Length: 248
Ligand code: SF4
Image 1 (cartoon, rainbow, N blue to C red):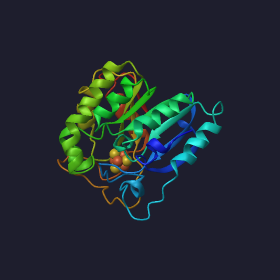
Image 2 (cartoon, helix red, strand yellow):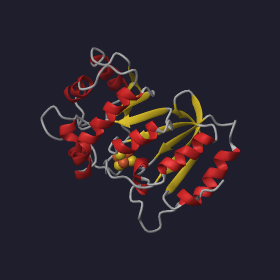
Image 3 (cartoon, rainbow, N blue to C red):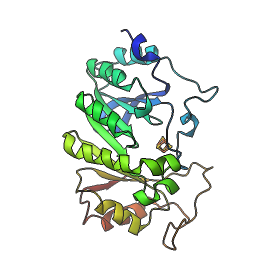
Image 4 (cartoon, protein in one colour):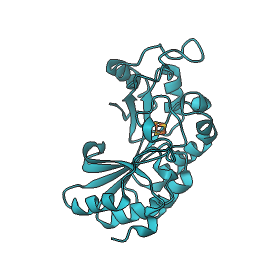
């Protein structure tokens, strides 16, 4: 396979060779691309957010493609994750080559690059998309990843809109950080049409985020992470707006 044409435009920081949980219903490999335009305090991949960082170990694209080539028929899908993969200039070519191997392709994204998502969708290169909904958009800069996230809020909304019209299965997922109150979650749930897939994810502190305290109004956060039981209760509370909400 000739990967020279797009290898220089891709920075791959990691490869998970087997996953049963990242692509609904499929056994998949997960490719982690380096670099992200957001800086969420709770990010579990903070080591790969600066794609130009000195000493960031990168995998050779050719090795990753060879691995995927060898696993044809053994794996069903490839998850494009990160970091924020849509920042990669060579992503279209990467997805096209992976698709040509017969894999189903899933994209994990923060939604800040709707033009890239649109291009991948137009090319028929995506079989599933998962988009983060960080917080009510007015809070995006505060808890959703800094100034770039604040500026990106409108583009995330655009990504939600184009997925609604694309006919490809997609999921919108919320990591339930303490700052997302019941009221804020209701606001988020009501801001979307009824979705087939709307997921609340347990927030797992990284240990060094130092943000387990309320931000903003009195109701905001509880200073402690939500528990799985809390998430079930919160999900129940938004079923009027998102009847298909799930918890994980
Ligand atoms: S958008 Fe995702 S990868 Fe980027 S900082 Fe936030 S959690 Fe990490």
